Length: 166
Image (cartoon, rainbow, N blue to C red; front, top):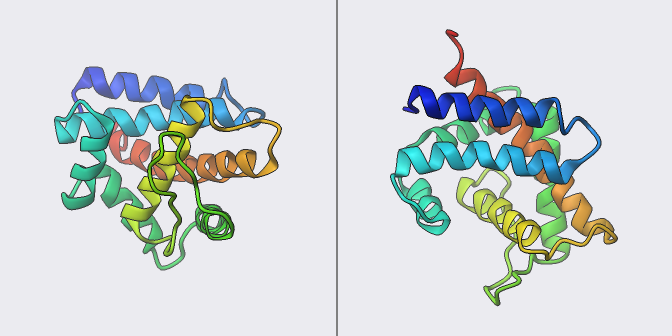
């Protein structure tokens, strides 16, 4: 579980995603929300590299994975989350999500599959952070938008769990 300092940092970035980024900048909001995921993954996995954190999260029970699976398997899943996940799946099926480092392209075959989803969101994060998402390309902006919408619900759920009694 996160220390009080890490909770404070998580809460700070989550608040900035909700307020400062507002509804006008999906890229900035994505960045803040991904930071929240990263804080939890780094703490629970005790890894310091993103790749090791992701691999650890796919084979171990953890807050990020548990939250995703709980949200996706609710009797009445959130329509925004399901819609965003299905839109990401469709975009990745129409054209695979490339890497700017020569890694094999990715797609989501099942939007309820944590391993596929976290890999695609991580790929979008890498492409955005390393300059491979073009604001003039509609598809790139849709990938960021749908990822951000999914992260809003996912990280929001983690926020609720972390601060339920505060």
